[in-house]
Image 1: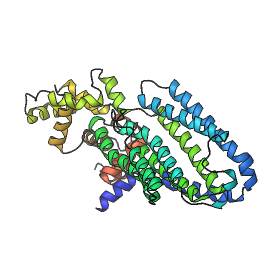
Image 2: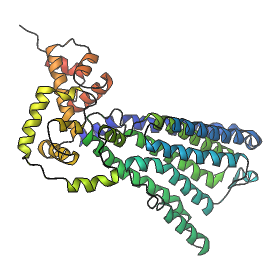
Image 3: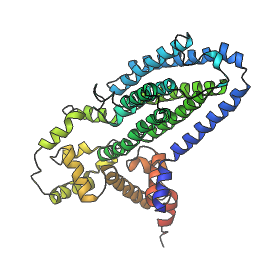
Image 4: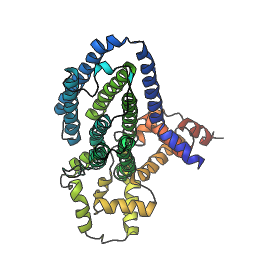
Length: 399
């Protein structure tokens, strides 16, 4: 149990650090905002922040459209940025406003219309990760159902005079839970198809969820007490979220797109299950395929290629993606990622034993790792020792 906790903390260390820093910065901004004069915020700062949000969103949308490169989810996020641009412009022109500026610095009740708007904003922020975690899921029919509970609760609260506002506040939590469940499934899928997770940063989605949760917390605080500190903090976290997310999404590859490019005949996600069900049963036993695979891995060492993928096994095994993944899982009890990583770690051990003075960068490159930092992190996670410690422990001085 302790080992699992240690590995979990090591794996998601950057997520914990990111969340801690973001929460600390949000708290700091909130306290600093108390020194902003109310009149200054109403007359100047609020307009400046909305202008920054509108400009950032518009520039980000243009950048995403220009860097489309066949990654469909970039278009989705670009369209969302255009919506944020329009909203920021409307707030800037005071065409749309949930609160009157005169209500600033007054304690107000938690009203249903603000919470319904918060649900819509949360739904918008969840479209991108849903499209990535579940390709093909966001059809016209499926993309709207998360909003149904919010509108139903809002209607009951308004027309039946039943106080259901806290249920409205909890609806976005259900959206976050939906994504958290699918992050694990997404990671498993990636590990079954890729031998490297460097460009497929699953931790990015946890960081995105942290930003959504902190932004949601700021919004709830703003609904409770609409004052300059709450309003300014909400605008700052939203601006950061749009900037950081756009930067990450613009340059982050889509694993499903990578597979489709490598195999033009690869079906669309929604058609994949049907094709796999119709595929023929392998004409050889797993033992035969296992022997062929091991001979190829030992003889050709394809794992030395950092971009080695599951579909590359088709070079020696006439199986589709599903059967290749099942073969690895059944015969070795691990994912394709872990299977290849075991070979790379053993190759690194062999290199360090043969030459204890070989540079870490050379060991990482010659054993198939993409970088020394990745090699050190994974080696320490799997062996419990850094490469230097392992080399010193297993190096024997000749007599």
